[in-house]
Length: 105
Image 1 (cartoon, rainbow, N blue to C red):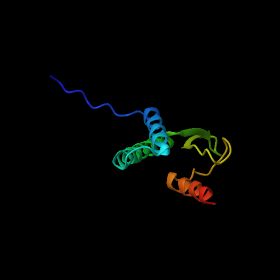
Image 2 (image 1 turned 90 degrees about the horizontal axis):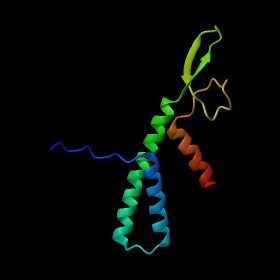
Image 3 (image 1 turned 90 degrees about the vertical axis):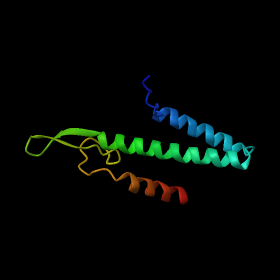
């Protein structure tokens, strides 16, 4: 009998589970041990979602024409404001730090 590979959670399923965990923890009715278990699960799922988004961002590239008329492939720059943006997007770590700074202010 061949063992089936364990099914990896999909991004959308993981995100939905994170929302369920947050809702349950916000109620404040979980015993401490269960709250810690849910917190650990939420951290694992959050890391998985973050890694999935980082990998997707790395895959996104756009095709453009260089100054010499040759077609070149460059990274998609979502924050650079348009198709003609030449600047590479900020790294996911820099982007998160910038978002955290805004949250803290």
